[in-house]
Picture 1 (cartoon, helix red, strand yellow):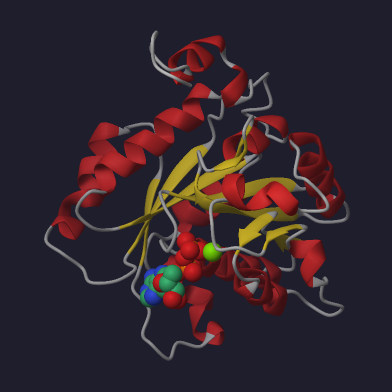
Picture 2 (tube, protein in one colour; picture 1 turned 60 degrees about the horizontal axis):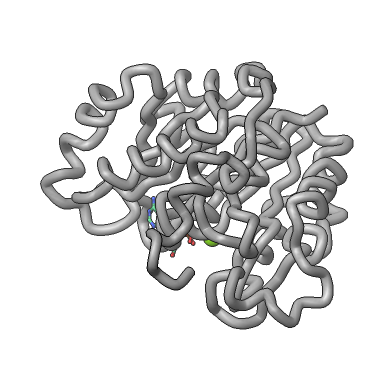
Length: 257
Ligand SMILES: Nc1ncnc2c1ncn2[C@@H]1O[C@H](COP(=O)(O)OP(=O)(O)O)[C@@H](O)[C@H]1O
Ligand SMILES: [Mg+2]
């Protein structure tokens, strides 16, 4: 069975596709059989196309990368109404398990942040609970990221995931906070590996990237990526099924739900 590595974000536009493409190419260079998928997408299949390019021939078809595509650029929860193949945790899990066959690594790009609602009773994170794996939180290295990382981390811990790392991505303008974020996160989340990914030049070539994380966050990153998964193969519960969460999601008495 493949190591399943979820590449989730604190938000959209934070570098999930770029990091997934990078991991796909780098792990492939190490001779590993890698598959990258993005089960859900809205508005465009651009991410699926990016991931498709990183695969060796014969490349998977777009629908083998993104089986649940919502044409409207809206949250899936809103856009899914008229989809022929409605996403369910069961269908999405079956897709992941099928994709993981004959691979050493299955990279799974998330959509938006971890609590993106796919349908009324299905958050993206429910898929992580159904098919456990390592989780890499991609977070933009700028002011505000400490809050976003803690929210994402706590949500994931709530559903039982415990093999979690953060990748601070120098995605765009580097502000003053970018200098101290990694140190601050290490203090706030002492048991979580915190890595950094550098800002890339505009005309970067994928062939230049092979040594990037070796030079920067170094061996620790690859050791974490390749370390044996299975720590969190306990009994994680889907987030939306937890009684406490259900209770809190309900509108206060007297308010219309
Ligand atoms: N480290 C980086 N250096 C430069 N540009 C980056 C970096 N990470 C992401 N980007 C750019 O930021 C934009 C959003 O990244 P993307 O991977 O599509 O985010 P997401 O998948 O989270 O929506 C893209 O144009 C991407 O090329
Ligand atoms: Mg993306």
